[in-house]
Length: 455
Image (cartoon, rainbow, N blue to C red; front, side, top):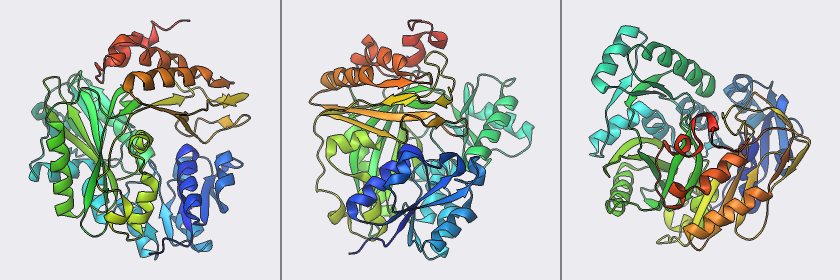
């Protein structure tokens, strides 16, 4: 079955580069949409054609649905790949793409509506008998209603955007006095980041682990899993280090993998997605959300399974059956760990925009680097400060840790501050090496505001 004649990539940086590489591997012509701030970016060189879709602010470019569709029509695209972030889980955008006669490379709009909206996803999970924790529905505008909802959920509370993920806009409220400001800030960030201001409340479980299940579905009622990842090391609720498979996973995990696969097959989930779970300190799993898109950390799963998840997305969107998309059954071999390299102060995790005077990523067997940058490029304050993702694959977890530390020490970056010192300290810490992971580990290892890092 043929795939697509030309695909517009509606994203930027490392994710656009990743999707363009997959399109090139399949011989599919591509159109890279970019903002004025990204003119001349190195990832644009991978595209067959390019189109500027607006000024630097994301709302005027990468979130500008009309500009994206206009570029797709002008260049005769028959599909749009949204990457991750921006419009990747926006059901209205997916519907607009389909109504324009093109294929949205991702789940169908009905699934984006059902699972891409986090509060509605929890309702569906509850109906299907998946374990869930305490949470509210979408908050109304009335502050009194938010306070009443919080009393039912219980403090401490996490205020979360309903229309997007990636940790963006997640704000903690320890008590009722902190809630109004947390809701206001989360609402503002959700509106800017996802063009959807809806937020909801979730009970914050401290010292929990974040475990997620990678799934791949087709348009014929079949879904398979590609095992799990651990994404517990987070700062400001955004993942920093991820690995596959999850170390010291509970005995209940295999049964949960099967339950998720069977349920999504019965319901007809039809592309790539990730079921995100909270593993409580007492060993119980709780459903958090389902990300109906490619994940930033998909590469660690690719490294242990040999499955190209972006190719799977494209083939699924084109109507291929699961048997033609994935090996049956998928197997996991070795261990892979990813570190996200950010342009930021390594102690306080504050963005560090500037010009990259030197940018020399590591290389070698078992090392994979994904980036949208090169020496001489500006890191602007308009977008997420992610510079690169560095993945190490090896025969064991211990070997992968050592491999990744060596690669990060080889990485040469000048012109901006970066978090490599913090990444190395985390990877080489006794709790991480022992697999004693939880979402509060970073401040425990580095100290408040990175106080334990060398000056």
